[in-house]
Length: 121
Image (tube, rainbow, N blue to C red; front, side, top):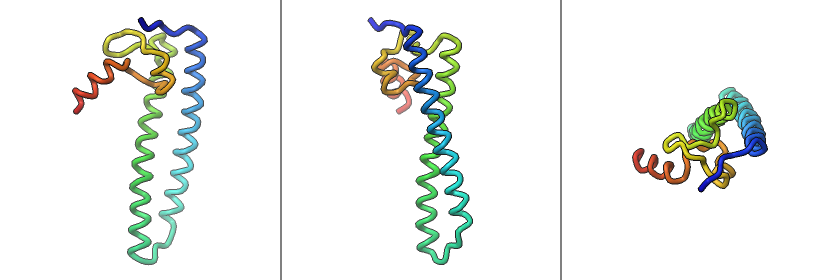
């Protein structure tokens, strides 16, 4: 039986989520500046352009993943405020602390996550 989180647990996870949010926002702002400076470069040949394009595509994918994580963090923070944090969205049972340690914005317990991933495949 997985036990529900107490007030100290909620405060701990809230701080972790807020710290991660700051880190992601810094990354997003830094990457946006890098992309702008890259656009301002004069690319002299096709090789320069190809290298810049490939790097830009990878950075865009990373940016999108970080934006997604940011949305999930914001959702988790709202759940802390509303008192629903740490509760699986499918079975409505508590999500285990070990899972939240690995992924503090987890929406599903392990069992339901596996079910959800199989349905998505």
